[in-house]
Image 1 (cartoon, rainbow, N blue to C red):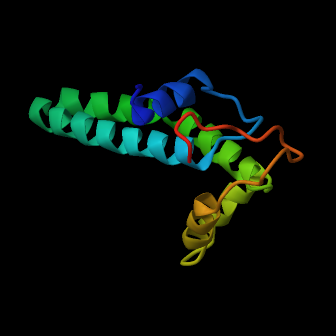
Image 2 (cartoon, rainbow, N blue to C red):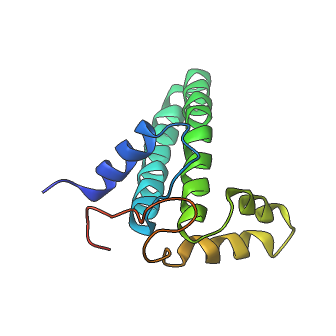
Length: 124
């Protein structure tokens, strides 16, 4: 049995700049968990290496900007919203909360205008 977190992260990275289609809720959250844990590891190692480590951390973060944005964009497509809904997060105080609620919602059943229903390999 394959690890869902690793599988979701690999799927995110192979769809590096794909802003079309849909991403299931499970794949989205598993990929974000993987990013978070990798960030902790890179941050810890970076702290040990000083300035070189800071540069490594910066490059790690920079490398994940576009895949993360594409992942959020496709997740918003899964709930039937335009990816541009992401920019609601820039509204002070409530924007981030509204985006988090949208990302946590279950995806549309069946096909929607953004593509077929993504099937998670993990059953949720």
